[in-house]
Image (cartoon, rainbow, N blue to C red; front, top):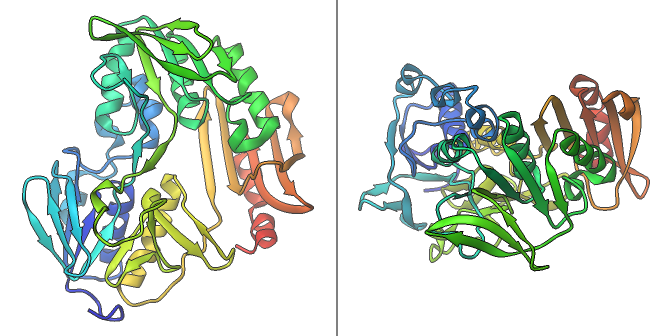
Length: 393
C-alpha cells in the first residue's frame, strides 16, 4: 500500500495513552475505517503517571485512572482486544500475531507497546520485590506497603523519587538509594537535585546515594533486604526496583525493523511502509534539531499520536516537539520544557529557591537549552518560546 493512500483498516498494538490517542485522533479527523486496539493488559486504557502517586497512595480508586469511560470507548467504534499481547510482527504483510494465536491483518499498523522496566538479577520469584509500570504493579505494591515494614527504593530517578515520596506520605519507613550523588541530579542538574535531596531528607526518607547494589537477600521466598557492593545489608520487607526502563521491543525481533533503542522511525514516525510507532517506543528523527530522539512521557505519547494519525491520513507532517517533563513529589510540582544536558548551568530568573518557588533557565555553552519551574508552572511556561527559539524546535 503506498503511504499516500488512506488505509482501510488500522491495527494499533498497545492500548495505553499513545495507542488510544491515535485512535481518537483518527476518528476526530473523520476516519471511518476499521480500528483495532490490541492491549497486553486486561484493564481498559488508563493513565500511568498516577500509578506512582494517587493510585499507589489510595487517594484514587483504580477506575479514576481510566482514560475514558466505557461509553466513550464504545463511541470510537473500535475493537478492543485486551489481555492478549502481541508476540510477532510481519512487516511486509502487516500482520500481528498475538499470544493467544490471533492473527490480525491491516493496511496499516501502529506500534505503541511502550516500555519494560529493568530488573535486578535475582528479583524474579522473590515476593515483596516490585517494579512499577502497570496498574497491577501499583496495586500489588500498595498491598505490600499496607502490610507495613520497611521499604527500600533502588533508583534515585523520577520514578524512584515519586514512589519514595508517596510511601512517606503513607507513613512508611523509606530508604532511597542510587548511584547518583543527588536525587534527579543526572536529569535536572545540581540545583534541583540538591533541593530534591534536601526535600526527601526533611520528609524523613533515609538517603543512601552514591552507592551500588550487589543483589537482594531473601528468606523463605520473600525479600529480606538489599545488599550493597560495600557488603552492607539494608533490611527491607518491600523493595521497589526503579533503575530505568527499556523499549518493549522484544516481540519485534526478527521483524526486520531496527530496534536498537526503540523502533527507529523517520521524521514522520514511520518505521516502514504502512508501519508507524508512537510514544516511549518510538525513536524518530527531529527535523529541526537534526537529531534522533526518544522521549518517555505521557505528553509526548499524546502529541506524537496526533502526527501519526495525520500521516496515516496522508497529511505528511514531521513531528517536531519541544520536550516537556513533569513530576510531583510531596507538595512540590516541577515542570520543565526543553533539554537539560549534563554540564548545563541553571540560572534563576524568577522567584527564589529559598522561598520554594522559582524559574530557572538552563544554559550550555552560552545557549538556552531548557526552562524549569519549581512550584511556578505558569511562569515557566512563559519562557517556553524562548527555549524553542534557542534550540530551533
